[in-house]
Length: 221
Image (cartoon, rainbow, N blue to C red; front, side, top):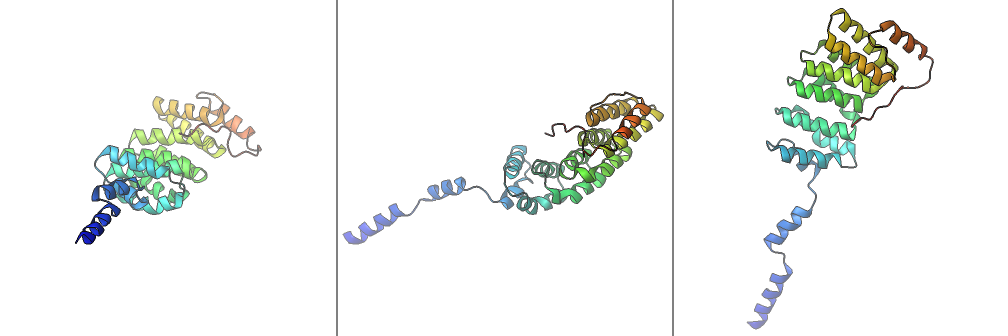
């Protein structure tokens, strides 16, 4: 009998308690699928924590596989958190999906965030998409974001597009969008010609033979 009791006692000490198992499980980093599911949480702190953890992962493609479906979530907060992950990791594979959000998402804040992300993940494809948003989006916060993002691209194509947008704003007597376009042109080129369209276009023409993709590379937080 004593031998049996001794054996049971030894097993009890050898096996971890449920509390120890829970603690060990807590120390294990959650999987990408678990983190992606947390983006659906109604708790902002949970969503933000999951987004930050996903953005620190070293394999952008694996993260994209886990979060892609979250761009189709019914929650705008989930879609925005997912865009934030895509932007921080600069997931190029997300380009087409984010572009669709910029065109069609019903929430203007999601469209605004999609604009910012496109300038990060697909800068060479972004100009025409951002131009459409700047011209045709129903919400001023999206148009403003698209104009600002064109400036952040800093490319010759973006500068030409901003000149066109500035001309349209001047013709429409839209002082707000005119000022935005001027500031973005300065951000893109490092120059300042105000509303002088001839000055902007002449300067851009003189740069057409310069072999550089961008004039200025502003910080992209």
